[in-house]
Image (cartoon, rainbow, N blue to C red; front, side, top):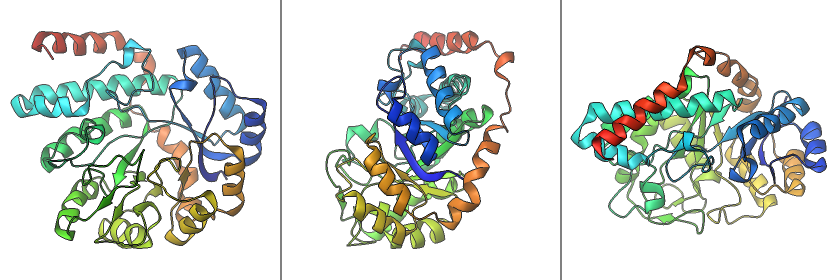
Length: 338
């Protein structure tokens, strides 16, 4: 069995230290960033080397498209931000749905061709009047019905190629105007407003993975940020949303997480978090987590099932002329002047 930890690596090739420790500690996942990607063939070789060392370790990427694009050197991944599709939807719903599905189809095709297992989409946050642009541009807007329609298309595209989705940032990052990458957002929103942000997550509660938000929601838990809150993890996400999949944290290196690694481990053990995401590339931290972070019952029961999800892909890469889909997407964008 793998360990309930997602790690990052430093460069486009594994270092000797990374090789040794991935083989020894077998993390649940390795997440890739732009620094790890230079060419398609190089990325394939990197992924192959990781899986050779630990065959059950999964490869993750945060490839939303638009402003969050780990393939920023590749024309194949040149797409609009999600909020742009929402604005198109307001004028022409059918056109927006076609564009979103094509975006997901093309992205998922390439991720599968590289042997990437998990993409951390969909972003289910609902923006409000003062949501910071960093979150707002990544969402499909404030309307719950439209949000669900467009995010279902993203998930469908991923599922067709056996790419495992991750809904985020549960229980909702749109409620704040602070960026949890740089500070700890604190929400004073009343419970009625907080509950509204749960509705989209409730609709997608069948997805196998959920990523937390590093936010303190005072009307739910005055003491803990949501990632380490027993109240939010168990009463809100598990019970109210009836979520039975695995819950992973957002990156522990973000400033929204105010805790050192030992406190993170203790708080996570108490809260019932299933997987820790740590993008430090620091194996001292990773070894500490591996030794002291307890495997939850959910992790023990579900972690081995993720490889089977990948094998349920509905589409065969060999049967697809991906250039046709690129051409269709680009022609629509050009025709309508987006």
